[in-house]
Length: 247
Image (cartoon, rainbow, N blue to C red; front, side, top):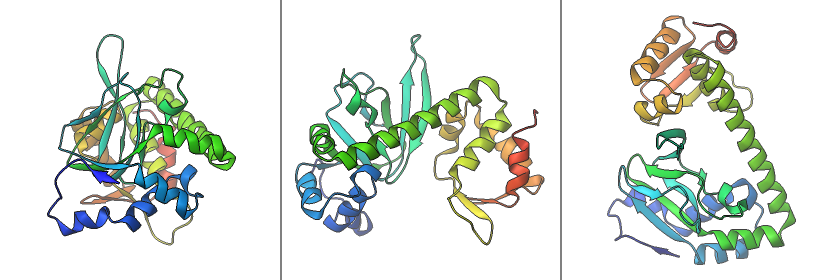
C-alpha cells in the first residue's frame, strides 16, 4: 500500500494509516467485513491512501470509476449535476463511509456523481477491479453488497419524497431521526453534527439561516438540545409527531 502525499507530521493522523487501523476500516465496510485476513492484506497491498485539501475534488461525475474510496478522516460532499448544470448535494460522507459503490454495478463504469472534500480529508482508495473480483468469487460479499445498494436506494427515494412533498421542518426532522443510533438508550440519544452547517443545509434543500431557525425552534420546544457538535434528542416521540405537521 502506498500514499500519494508526503508523510503527515501529526502523530494522531499517522495512527489512522497503520495497518491495523486500515484493516479495521476495511472490515467496517459491510460487504467486505467477512473477508479473511489474507484477502484483506492482499486488498490493502493494491490500495493507496489519498489526501485532499479542503474544497478539492476527489473525482467528477462521468469520470472513469477506477477506485472505490473509504473515508479515513474528514468529510466528502457528494453532488450530482442536473441537466441545466446546477449542482445538487446528495449527502455528506464521513469516516468509514464509502464512495463509488454504485459505479461498480454500472455498465458504463463511470462515477454517477462528483465528490468534493469539505475539509482536509484522507481516504483509502481500493481498485474497483479488485472489488469486483471479490464479489465474483465471494457470493456472501455479493449478497451483502446488493443488500446495501437496496438500502441506499430506499434512503435516496425517501430523500426525493421529502424534497418534493414535505416542508423544511419535516426534512430536518427526517434527517435527525435517520441519524439516530440504533438500539435502545437509557438517556437522550445523540446525533453528531460534524458536517459544516452550510453543506448540511444544502443537503436538506434549505438555507443555513433556515436551518439555524428550525434548530432553534426545536430547542425552544424542548425537543432537542445542542452542545457544540452534539445534538441530543430529548423527546423522540414529539420529534416524530412534528413529521405530521406542516409549518
